[in-house]
Image (cartoon, rainbow, N blue to C red; front, top):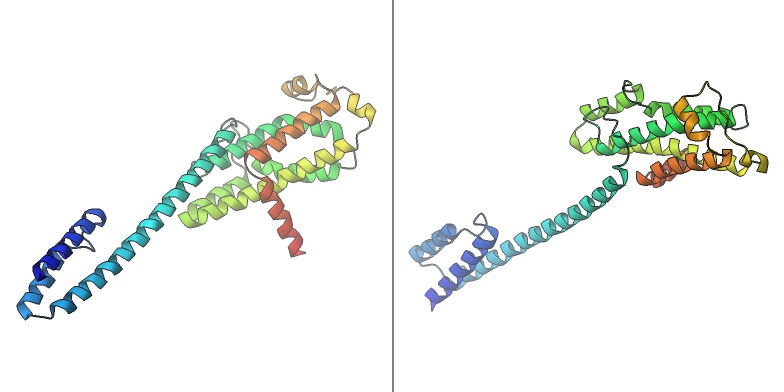
Amino acid sequence: MNQDILNQLRDKYKRAAEKYGEKIFSLKELEGRITHLMTTRGNFQTFIAAEMEFFEKAMSIVKTKEEELKRKTEAGARIDAILEKNLEKIKKYRDSFFDPAASIEVRKMVGAVSDWYTMAFPLIKYLFRGGDAWPEIMVIEGEIERLYIPGGRPITAFLKNYVDDLKKMGAGEKGNIERRLLQTCANTLYKMESVIKREMDKMTAFQRARAVTMTPAFDPEVREKWGKLKEFEALTEALSGISAVIDDFRLRDLAALGFKAADNAK
């Protein structure tokens, strides 16, 4: 009878070891304890009760770890799916590749902002120079220029500081550094978007229908792009471009959080 119970215990350990490993469910250690029981002629019932209690506790531990690993795996899969979906959205933008330490998302965002700035900001300057919004636009331009890297241009001081911080910090801090950069960019682009919308609402019917006629002082490619459109049509396209960057890089919520933090600090 006792031998049957011991064999059942051995079988339970064997199955558990096959599934969870012998680090916890060691058959060798179990046999050592059985040998000690036989040698010392200990109480068999007490031994079996203690062994079953130990086995159940060990099973509880490994199952908890198994469930935790499953949750992490599932969460990781969801995160990967989100990142994959986001990368799908942003793959159309140029990779500025200003430093390999920077994430692909940041490099693409810098490329997107730089390309939008190159083509759209001359139009904004052309239409709003000298107007009520001009001082505000100049401030925003200074903020955008911190991200401006056209092909072949050196990295800006703002982005160099970001890269230096990345290289100094451990893996755990890199995510925070990137989020701060993205939030700073989000605030700038969101302000630019808001100014364009506001100024478009104020345009007269004459301004809306007037053709864009840039002087030869502007870049020929820029003149070619906007010269075919009416002023309102051109601004609509410029606005669509910056709104797409904000949405594709998930910056709208970051911008809202940034403004909320600023309000709370007043």
